[in-house]
Length: 297
Image (cartoon, rainbow, N blue to C red; front, top):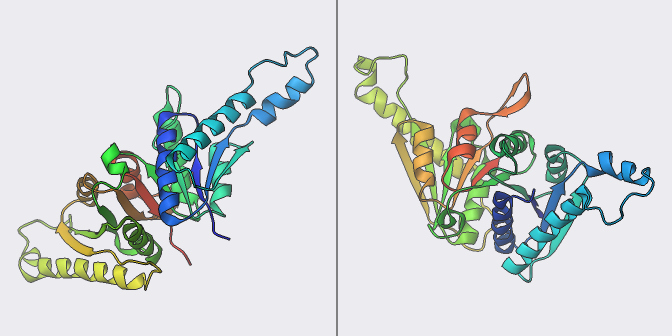
């Protein structure tokens, strides 16, 4: 049985845009779509209503609102793709716990770039960051303009980050480009060591050329490591090696991309698993949807 594509919704407009993207993606991949809304109403509200004599049966409860959020998202996905297999679930958990549980049995998990409320950027951002740092499957954060969210640019970008880019990220990007009939742009950024002066003799001529050659080797290694993905049509692959800032280069490339794919460079801090600075920056500032793909043992 194929693992579904899961999208988390919260009733916000960015969440509904994530539903649009996920519905299109499910059709492209031939996958069922599972729409999930996490709400803690059951813990705090259901028992209280049962124990309250004379409670108004017509009272609009948090549960009613949660069911309405799911119905709205399901209707929107159905209008987007009438033949799509769609399932919904209202989960009595916090958003991160609910979506991490779903991620264990999902092809990928999709979220919006922000959620509801006066501190929505912080709240929904924390959900997407937590998922990207901990989920066992790819996590896609939908952001960017309509052109970037649709298959309008004809380009999927894979950021090659050395040890951060495993074969899983390369295979994911390759398949995404194939089903979209788009070009796959494989990008590796190199830079001169910051602790050496630009005029140092070791940075002139051959040594700097050697750094660039190493970058080309990493691009070739990433393409070889992904093996032979099972796709019906192989996309055109364009290799790009350039000197500069990784974050600045990938952000610039995202402006003309339909999807940016990065490997999950995870580290453990006092607050648990966290993304590296590049992944963190892409999730917050890229001009197109961003897929964070974890290593697979």
